[in-house]
Length: 130
Image (tube, rainbow, N blue to C red; front, top):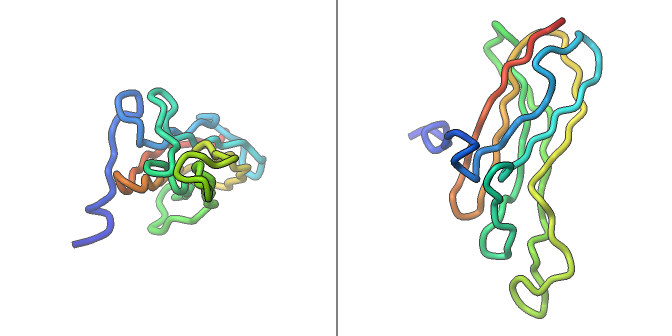
């Protein structure tokens, strides 16, 4: 069995666990652009002690390249935990991450997210160079 066999994908408009990648479709080589990745964009994902998104990772695979490159990772560590009990805490994080990226080739952004109950989810978005 391979890890890739355990990664799930679906249409983000119908499934709350899928990471949604928002960025320009076309960018200029070497110019910084913003990439926002959100889990639960159309259908909100719970953010409770018992059920939450733990992290989001963003990767880039240049067109024609065998390998992917990790852009970054965002950990979400406040889900209402408290000494008072579950969901009694003073802080909650929301599952949205913003990355500032530069690329020198067209390719594909790949987002991976992890739900503590429902496992790994991915999505991708192609980007072109102007």
